[in-house]
Image (cartoon, rainbow, N blue to C red; front, top):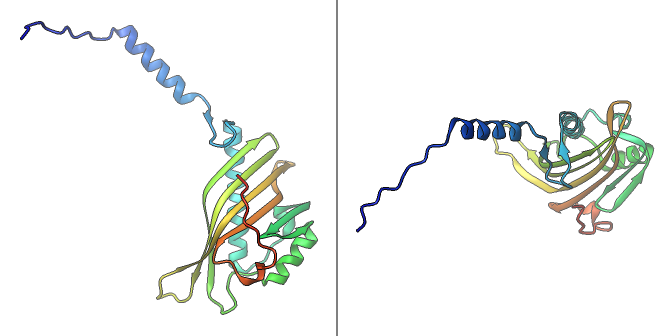
Length: 192
């Protein structure tokens, strides 16, 4: 066995300072978004938060049974595609919702909430794309545990008009628990 000592080399103060400066610069650099390798900046981060708030508010209003003022959410010429049933323009979207029995309860009066998860939102100037997983949860009684009702995916194309985000195109696809109303129009599809 050799009795050689391995010298321990301590980094100089210069090397440690350079490593610390590089770490600080990396932390301050814009972060790459998951989708399309777009840079996340302070402005696009604010846009992303506004878009996520818009989507959550949309479903919160729907779940509360207060109805929708489509002008808050959709452009005048927006397209809504729910499991292949398509409505073009705000008036047609309102008519679609009226025919579906819009509101925060199912046909038996149970409370229904929509959970939005795993959002992927990409902002490019005054346009954006959002993708989320939605899960319908039903509450039948304050003493009973909630249960899952349905689940699927949503893909939205949005535009920013006068500083506010609006939905231009919305594609909603069920993955499970789909009501029979969609049987004739449903086609499995992917938007990512």
